[in-house]
Image 1: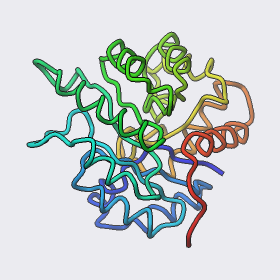
Image 2: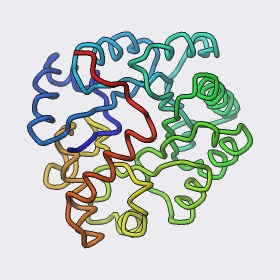
Image 3: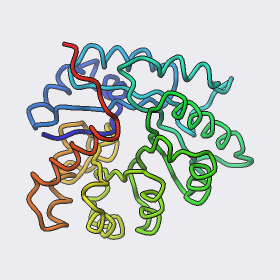
Image 4: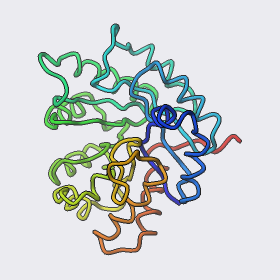
Amino acid sequence: MLVDSHCHLTLLDREHHGSTEQIVAAAKREGVDRLLCVSVDLETVPHIIQLAKTHQGVFASVGMHPNTAATIEPGFDELAALAADPCVIAIGETGLDYYRSEGDLAWQRDRFRTHIAVAKALRKPLIIHNREATEDVLEVLHQDGAHAVGGVMHCFVDTWETAQRAMDLGFYVSFSGIVTFRNAKSVQEVARRMPLERMLVETDAPYLAPVPHRGKSNQPAYVRYVAEYIAELKGIPAQEVFAATTRNFVTLFKPPAPLH
């Protein structure tokens, strides 16, 4: 069994003309029996929750990406109300992105802190987006007590030192298709050193398709290539990576038993 710990089915819906059924079925044929459909804005949260209620093994998150524009910032009460649904097993994705945004980014840090507060109140783990903001991300997580709920550093492309600091805060580290790219030597080294018990795998579909599908639209079925590549890096059977990352997903997110 395998888990795609981070995908965007609503974006795949748009690309594939609403064929979520085929996307989920293709994933299951590859042994991917659980998918976490991650929110990047609040407008699509009802759709994500409906997908989770409709498709066995699909779960939802609630959050607003640090680069998502908002005329009104989402408040604690709004986020908490949306995230209270049992299908919602995580808060995010949230975090900081200093690559795409410019100027005074205090609003990003405020948004991030609101997500952490909701996660702590609801006892649901965090999905962290970090791009060129490592020190501030780790500082906010530490200052705001995010270790109380933990979470995952999604689509990890940072250093081994950063991975260690994240693990010290109670976070898992998730690898995407980037780890299969020829020029991703530093990410590959982190994956090689990462303890299996602190690792997750993901697609971030429809983005970042792994080799041999690089450059194409990604989908949850392709998470197998990520896990198999990490197994090669570590020199262990792929089934060990499959089993460990599935176990870690259940330990961290505590998905409810299927209702259908």
